Length: 282
Image (cartoon, rainbow, N blue to C red; front, side):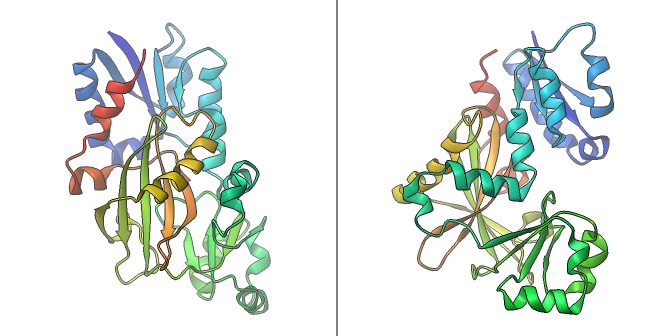
């Protein structure tokens, strides 16, 4: 029996009990023993014998790096963990790596990096940003839509974001929807359209609706350009989120390397955990 660790922050593990159990049950069928390990204990847990595989679900690249230095396969690669959990670094990376055929057209919202959001906490700074066309403010490390705000609503974000790195972006008219493309071992697995409910954000966890989406051949080729750019793209399970435009195009939004899968289990027949484990080569 092979051994695999699922490493989480304790509060995240509590929220993802069902997800962890899916790994345990599917792992048994493939003779892989998946164990939850708190991030505070991963080095101690690995002292006597290293696991055969690690799933780093902490968003901390140092956890991945620790296992990489010891020759243990880890999903995800420390480079991907670092990039995907810093929105601006991810955009800059794609600016350098995407094919010219993609970059010669608009491929993501106009974006500005601000190293300290405190500089924006005045009526004058907000008005200046709005005049420049930046209507949305996001922390570079936020997840689930909880740290995404309209620039004009300063009272909602100034205390949350003050002192932190943020990006400012234009607001894309996509009818409060986005497309999450699940990627499994470098292949498009499934695309889900998320639509916001009384909110410009479309996150499922915030109460939006969701449905499976078919992709055209052109969309698949376009999305594949993003996948092939990522470090160790052919390993693991992650998602790339896009904003659909009225002309049928897609604008890059973000990469979720610690992607949630609840919507797949609630709204499709897919079992992404079982399919993931079947593809493991240990």
